[in-house]
Length: 105
Image (cartoon, rainbow, N blue to C red):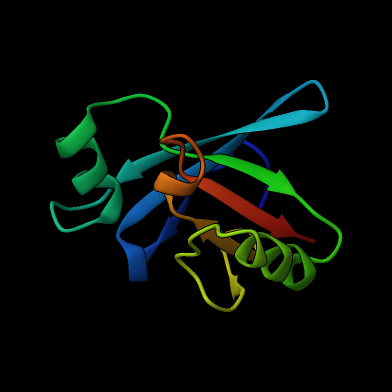
């Protein structure tokens, strides 16, 4: 994906664009329909920050470590995300109310 150029993720019904901010990036999400997870999030919580992503070197090792410490994993195995990276989410009840995404290049 070219940074800043929107890309549609049809299977999850949203459009995404990445904007560089220093060494970090902000990912903007737009629902494509009312059944999109993004639309459901906005309906339940309003607009704003949906999740925080942290890049890790070994996603499986981090998932196993976090699970062993009691974290609730939404994804039991890494999957491929919108940008071709391996991703996995932790449930907000394990992270003080913040949806946390682990990602690995």
